[in-house]
Structure formats: structure tokens, C-alpha cells
Length: 443
Ligand code: PHE
Image (cartoon, rainbow, N blue to C red; front, side, top):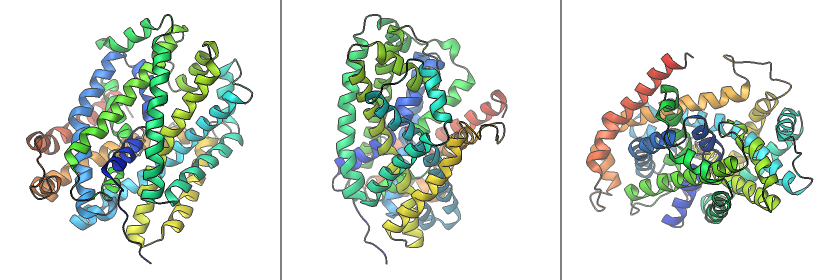
């Protein structure tokens, strides 16, 4: 039986859902450590430039494709031009890949949230993190819980599940983040962290750092895999797409920047290393909270914040695949959610085990977890590149603009910029970054 296509209750609901998809572990976990590793302010500057020029363009392109076709990504491409449906297929694949490892990290967050309150995180946080993630059972249990919560929200549908939960979780997240930022920047000794974060060290800007920034923009804005196409497909014709595609990246970037202010000054204030890498959130921060007055409270609030961010993203990842099964194979939502979340849970199990007992199993020199994360870093920019070519040369700029302006009824001041970006600059930038990576990273 086919179900009637859902719509967002309001444009605000759409923005919360899209910003919810964008704001996630990418902002809170990855962005601060990438900035910490790649020269602080210099990395932030490059990141901002890529968001402004490429992020905005691709987000708008995806919204236009989704709303025009009122279909999720595979079927959306297919409807416009059959030969290009594979781009949507690639996106569905990316949904599986990303959610399987994303949910494992979501499980870590749940564990840390509970552990902060019950029993506390042991003082040797590095040893604790290592033994927790390599445990064969506990992280998988939390991964299951995280996936189950994701599935329940998606099961409740667009309006009653995704929109409703994002309208609650996103503002809550923002408030908690601001409180933690204030706490962090007012700690004695925080100034050094603020300076590090804001002063660009251009010597750290290597080609590798630019590649990292580009990959991060795609991942953080949920671009290149049809997520925004899918969310856009539930939008009504009179919503202003160009405005929405400025607001969503703005909110996402704001949260990423604030996350840096929440984390880096505190790290400096207590004399830790900002370049600690992926362990920054799970190893360094618990030590920071342990030394902070009311640290348990702030630690708990912080992990609730991260949990909300991760959930509003994981539901969008699941929705991409669920909407595909609904549109293409006419599956009911219930069946799609149960079957797909089970598959993704199972895919996440080896990813979790690869941190411990399966760590010796390598694909191209990477363990399963890193390999999944690495594949998504490639698929998303490639998906974005193909989307630009698709809009610029297959569907045609005029048709996209017609959709964005709803047949000329809505003004679109950035039309010139959008055209140049989508036809030339964005695709060339992605190709340039890849070519660089081939030489610099030698993979
Ligand atoms: N944007 C999310 C984050 O930053 C991750 C994500 C990627 C979500 C792609 C959906 C699609 O955590």
C-alpha cells in the first residue's frame, strides 16, 4: 500500500530538522579536534570559506531537486533523468555506511552520559576510553540502544517523529551549548585557548588540512548523499529555498564555532593538549570536567547536548534509506524502519568490534571503523560533485532556478553566484582537492 506523502508542519519545523541533521557529532566531536590539529584559526578560516561558497550552493541544489520532484534522492534523480539515478543510489549506500559507524559513536556518548552521573568516569580517562571501546559487549549494547531510539523517532514519521523531536532537541541543544561556552570562556586561563582558536597559524595550512576542511564541510552539512534532497521533498512550494539554504549552514557553522569555544578554552585552562585528536571529547574533556567546579553537572549536560545532536543527525540518515524503500519499493514505513535499522545495527557490530578483538582485520590498512568513516569522506564530496554536474549540465540551471523561485514568484538575489558556483567553482574545487589528496595523502 502506498502512503500519502508527508509534509513538514511549518518552515520552522523544516529548518530545525535540516539543522538537526547538519548539527551532529561532526560539529561537536570532529570540528574542535580538527581545528585543534590543523592550526586553530587558520583551519576555521578555510572551513568558513568553503561553507560560504560551496556549502551554500550544494545545499540549495539539493533542496531544489528534492522539492521539485517531491521524491527522496534515488527517485528524485531518476525522475529528472533516468541515467543519473545512480547518484541517488550512492547516497542511499552512504546512509548505510555512515549510520552504521555513527551509531557506534552515538552509543559511546550514551555510555559517557550515564557514566558521568552513575559511578563517574575513572581518573585515567585514556585507559578507560581504550578499555570501553575495545570491550566486545558494552559498546554494542549502547549502539543497540542508540539505534533503537533513532528507529523509534523515524518510525513516528516526518511530522510526529522527526519534526517534533527536532523542534525540542535543537533549541535545547543550543541553550546547553551557550551555558557550557560561558562556563568555558570564563575559566581562569581560558584566554590562551581563545587566542589559539582565533589566531590563524598559516604554516599549518597544508593540502592535507584543506582536504580535511572540505570533507568536514560535506559531512557536517549533511551534503552529497541526498539527505537534504529527502528532507526538501517534504517541503511545500511556497517556502523560500534560497533563504533556507543560507539559514541551515549558518546554524550549523554557528554550532561548530561555539563547540570550539565550549571545548578549546577549557582544554587550555587545565593545561591539556588541543591537538589530542578524536580522543579530545572522550579522553580530554572528562578530565576537564573533573577539575571544574560543578563538573559532574557540566559533564552530564555536555553529553546530553552531544546526544541530542547525534540523534537529530542519525534520524536523518535513517530517513534517507527509509524514504528510498517507500518511494522505490513501496514499502510501508514500519517495515522499512525495522528492516533497515536492523541491518545498520548489524553493520555497526563489526565496526565496534574493530576497536577491540577485531582490530587486526584491516581493509586498505584501516580497521573496519576507520574504513567506513574514510569511505564516507570520499562518497560525500563525490556525490556533491556529481550533483553539481547534474544540475549545471543535465537538469539545467534554468530549471533549478525556476524551482528555487517557484516559477518566478520568490526573489533569488544570489542567482548569479549560484550559477557560477554550481557550474564551475564547486566541481573544480572538489576535483582540485581530490587531486591534491592523491599526491599529498598518498592513498
Ligand atoms: N551532519 C552530521 C554531523 O555533523 C552527519 C551527517 C552526515 C548526517 C551526512 C546526515 C548526512 O554529525
